[in-house]
Length: 411
Image (tube, rainbow, N blue to C red; front, side, top):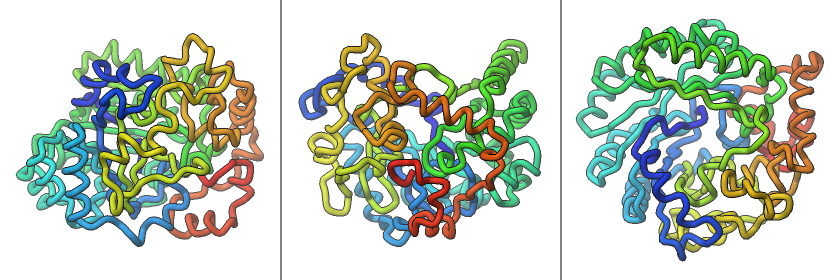
C-alpha cells in the first residue's frame, strides 16, 4: 500500500488544538488521546509496488491476521480512548471479506472512516454496501497517466481498472480523493497527473513524494528523482493550483531527503496516531518494529488503553527527554521532535541520534551520499525489487544483502 495520508480530515482540524499537550512528558500525565487509528487489516496485496511502505519482512505477519471480532474490539477500545478517525488500510484491505462489517461497526461507534485502497476488489455490490454501512471516504491510489508506468511500477496490469474504480467512487457520491506516489518514473508527468485528477473530478489529490521506508528504501537509488526534478514538480504544482481555477485541493508532500529539516514524524511519537497491524501489534508509526530492544504490545493479549498510555514502547520517544545533542539544545526541536526515529536508526544505527535529514546532524552526509548514489548510473541501473511474497522471503532469508546490507535493520 502507499503511504497513507489524512487528506483534509477530522484529525487535521483537531491536531493543532491538542499537539502541545504532551511535549516532553508521558501521555498518562497529559491525558493525551489517539485521534487517528490506522487499521492495517492485512499485508496481502495483489499489487507489487516498488515503493510500498509495508515492512519488507511482511511475509512473517501474513499467517496470523486478526479476526473480524478482534478488529471490532480494537475499534471499540480505541474509540473509548478518544480516536475519532479510522483508516482501513493494508496491503489491500479489500482482500478481506469482512470490511463491510468493520465499516458498519465504525459508523455505530462514531468514527469518520476512510478506506485506503488500490481499487482492486472494489465492485458495485461492495461499494453499495459501504455506502449503506456508513463509510465516509475512499482514498484511491493512482500511479501515472500512462498505462506503461502504472503497470511497471506496480508490476501488475491495473491501469484500466483504476479508471473504472475512480468513476465508480464518484458515481456513488463519495468525494474523489486520490493519492499519487511521486518518484523518478512519473515526476516528469506532474502537469498531466494534475489534469487527469481534475478530469476525474477529484476534490483532493495528494502528490506524495516517495519517503524511503519499507520497500522504497530497498529501491531508493532506483526511485529517487533529482533535486531539480522535485523543484520543477513543485513549481508546476503551484502554477496549476494558481491558474487552473479548479476547486481541487492539492497537497504536495516534499520528500525528506530534499529538506534541510526533518518532519515531526506522525506528528510526534505517540501523540496522535495509533496503528494496529494485521497481526495485532500496536505501533506509534508504520516502521516502528525496525527499532531494537523494543517490545510492542499486541491487542490479542494487551489492553489498548495500557498500550497507548503506559507501555514502555509508546512512552519511549514521547516528548524530548530522550534527546541527545544536537537535538537536546536545539531551538527548533519542538518543530520536529528530532525527526523520525525509524529512519534515524535504519541509516545510523542509533535511534536516539538526530535524524540525518537535518543539516545539523553529524550523519547528514548519509543523505547527501544517497542523493549522489541515485544519480550514479551504475547504482541506479540495478533492478527494482518488487514487493511480493517471494522477495519478502528472500529478504528474510538474507539473500538481498547487496541491497539492504548497509542498513541497520530490515526496512
